[in-house]
Length: 637
Image (cartoon, rainbow, N blue to C red; front, side, top):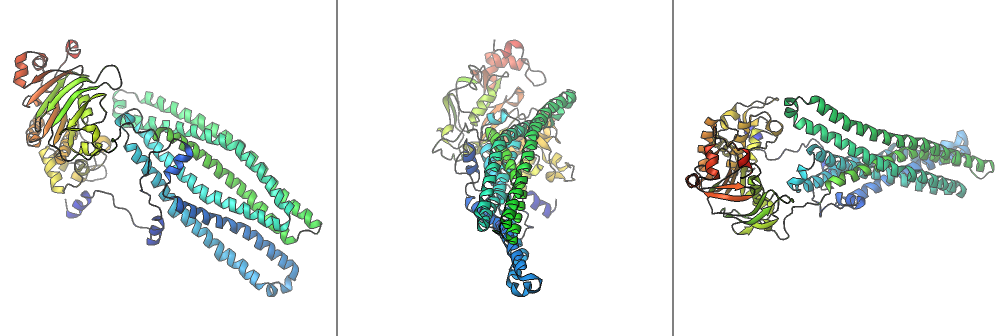
């Protein structure tokens, strides 16, 4: 690959596009869209909304003030219209322009220069400063909080549903902020200015507007809570559709292999049917709201124009006052529909925010202890002291387990399914907290160090290898993001992955290390995925190495090569290797046999064979290097 290709591959972050102007960039920089939240997300709606945009309030308030100023231009428009008409009636056709030149100039300047400028500034505040930043600010905070959740949080939900909730909540909150600024501040300033203008005409006309406003607000109060509730129900149903569809697509090979396309189609249609019902319910309340809204809006011009005409017949209002009142009435009547639909959208978005909060604001149940320290690079002394964990149940997992690994010691872990092997590793990584006892590394309790620093000291290769839909280079470099190209390739060679990576080509024509691997690495075979994972572990070079069936998907020839490569990787490291293929662990320093969460045997391969116990039976019953458990062995009898 050429020099340019190397530069592309060595990027650790995507380059930001800077096609926007420097002025727009400075405006957008008024809000720090990536600042972390100061605390956990609150459980109540308004507190959650304040938490989501904390740090951006000064800029949001300035944007609201600008929008309010723009709203007053609507009133000034009506005022100027009334002044022009009164001046025209008074001066007549001949003397109008000579007697009222400055009024005409002011009229033109306002409509051609000042009003467009005010709208332009307000538009820039919303489209450049508010909308892009608020969405990213909320999304980044929700995503950061979600990433801190324990694995059980993700085990109990759809990945697509969680992602949908993040996007839904961030978008809804952005719309609320934008519309509150762009519409509500504008409308309030317009109505307040209109009341002041009508007071200059006649107090009774202003009072008529206020009485109408009371009825309008009563209509809003009646319908919007219904809109909010039904919108929340619709959002929940929509997220369920997304979760169902994503779950099916994620497991599409299983769907195909079991010929269950019709079954998955029915499941999706059922979810879509629920969404359709919720959408119809939302549409019903929307239709009734619009009908009554138009009725109330139609009353306003009748009140204001009719009232001013009546005053004119009494000689208490000028033709300009009629025109000004008419302009105000028509503008507010038009704005009524606009504002009402915006309010309906805001309440609908609030319903979606509340729905998202149910999923996204759950407290993190596995956190760093107060005062947790950073764990430096360890020697690898591991100790399990009377450790018990049963996933909150009465049985399962491990119970009263004691195990000590000295720095650099390499042990194999053997046992039937459910014996506690994976639980042991999960507890070491602190994916769960022990229910009793403690686990220490170099004498430090894993609960008293930060999770990130703990896991930086442990490299793990699992049977179910995890791949990102990114390039092969990025997937390997995930083990150590500051690694050089040469180090990445060296790790790939050590894991017997370099040769097949060179031959990779993705659907966009990217080749070799630049080729993307597809979602969860679907473009690779199981053995290729494991070799990528091994290369990642080589690159990480952590002092503790965990191998969970790390070579199970490799053919015998490749396995032998990888086993040879593993020897220098394991040199000087503390190693825990879970295996059903006993040949992969026979040369390790010690082997422990787990059964029902207890260590029932331990020793070297030769020692365990000599004992003639469970391990010896496992070895004797191997076929092709794999363990085969009968019912008696699986139950530990």
